[in-house]
Image 1 (tube, each protein chain N blue to C red):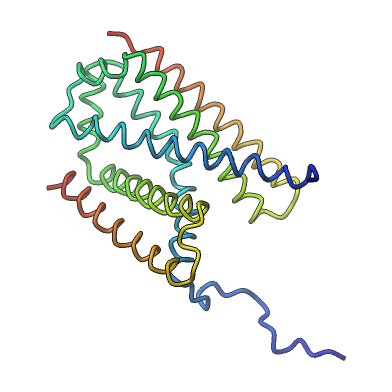
Image 2: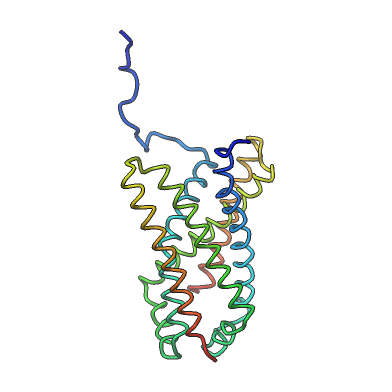
Length: 127
Length: 113
């Protein structure tokens, strides 16, 4: 009889140590799902901004509340992360960053650029 | 080359073409947003009423709906095993995206200067 006892019985996500390339990749997927959910929100905002001057004003007031600021920030972060990692994936399709070293380096590059963009976004929106 | 090999190629190419347009449009829109310190209703409506901007915005949403379809489809195909649930979810996502497209058309028809 074969022994299977040493094999894991279930997949424990917390036991998986992803390299930085894997982390930004799974967050590309996660932010993609978030952006999908934000499509109707963006349309609702667009509709309010278009309808009349009063609803445009209503939208700018709505955007000041802490809750909507949290969601706007979440949406902007999703967009920024998805765009920058997506750009890296396009460059990988064009056969850049194929070695392990340049792949890791470009993934850290993504993290740094993303952090800088988000600091700028937060400074621009909230300060 | 077999047809099976081609099946994955079309969404793969669509995903990348739409990605490039979405990326370019974001920079185009950003250039406009950063130009204004505070955006007024009159300026915003004039921008949306512009024919070129209307077409580019429509293409932006069309690209986004296609991009979202391929992306969410991939996610559902990866994680949802039961066939019937997978089919229902894909159907729901398709309806959601097509509905969003019609909503955008309705909004664009509201734009009058």
